[in-house]
Length: 87
Image 1: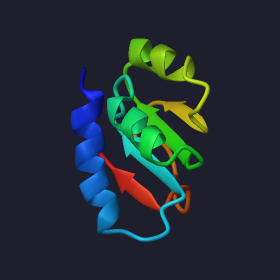
Image 2: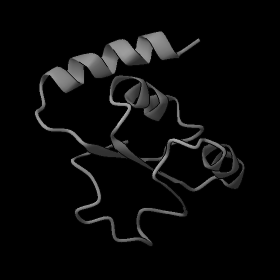
Image 3: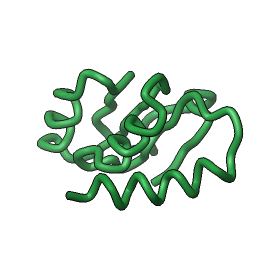
Image 4: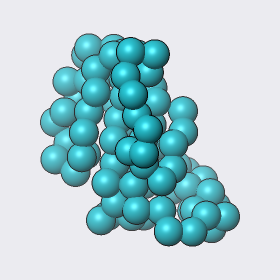
């Protein structure tokens, strides 16, 4: 139900960028924002970071995510992993 609205939002965001081939969401929850990006950029490398173990299980079930990291952004180094980073 959220996908059309999120696609509209990320369409506006992407119009203000150039060359986005990868993205990471810090605090991805179950991946609604990343699903919108996947719809708009189906070939992009998409990464998720999530602290909630149950949400991580859901994220790992999506075959289109390039990586899913369980933990806090304070514990990991994500330098250079993505063109677009958001929370």
